[in-house]
Image (cartoon, rainbow, N blue to C red; front, side, top):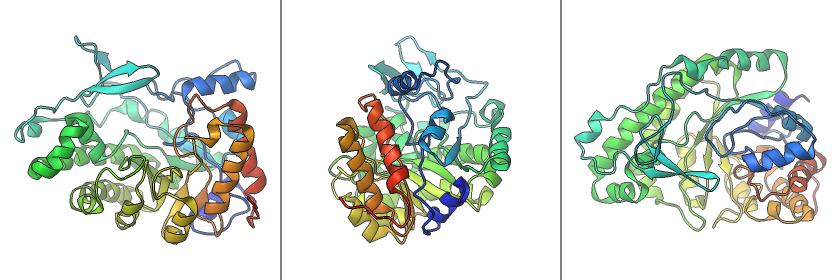
Length: 379
């Protein structure tokens, strides 16, 4: 069974020859510091060009994918020609949405929200980024078509922006303020969600339409959970968030009707999963096993007929421990999610610098060894 066949079986709830393995997707990259350690460990001297400059995981390196047995190649939107982030007089790094960042340690953090003091009339003037920019698509179709025609890898489209409507309303308004808006000024919240979801839908359409015939799924990311609870209750998701998300998903389905909807969502979101399914989400990541209510075995039992599970490999503990911890973690997630198909082996989020290199490789070699069907793992 080749890579593409393996993934297609899994995402249609059939058992392939082994569990598919993913790396370099929207939520399964390697942060720079660990990536450099892996290159040193492999005695690889050269690095590819940065495909995500300014991010904590700037590189995509398929040499590592091939070593670990990944079944994927991932399309990544390019940077626009007509905009470059700049530093303003206050030292904020301003992106094309007008959002300001500062670097704290290794991580860029939002430090300026351009609509923090906006009135409902002010937000009509907000334009957002210029969507149609040839730089975003330069070489994208050619690369994706080549993978499709000349390899047997499964190809997906990574998220072109870091979030959906709720996330960008946080970025533009400030998270605390927008959560207050959702309860005390719902008219304002609804209007901003509508404006932002229009922009995101346009960006996705521009990006996806040229490659629609080559990809299996389209990736989205939006975080609704903390470690012990959801940010918002299911009722609020249905009332305010479901519609803006559907606008984006439906727009993409019109230009790429044969693709599946992949959602990365961190945290304790067990209560929201039925709403996700009702919202058209078909593949769910991150499946954090240490978050409240996110037991892998129970998720498979409760939602395994309705969702494809992607991720679950716990970067919050076992992967930072011993090699044996990493092996046990990989076996546990496979045992929980893989039976009956519908599972793709990956992390809950990007590999962080505190993951030892040997643990990185141990997790994937375990997936190769123990991910063969029929699954037969004793913990």
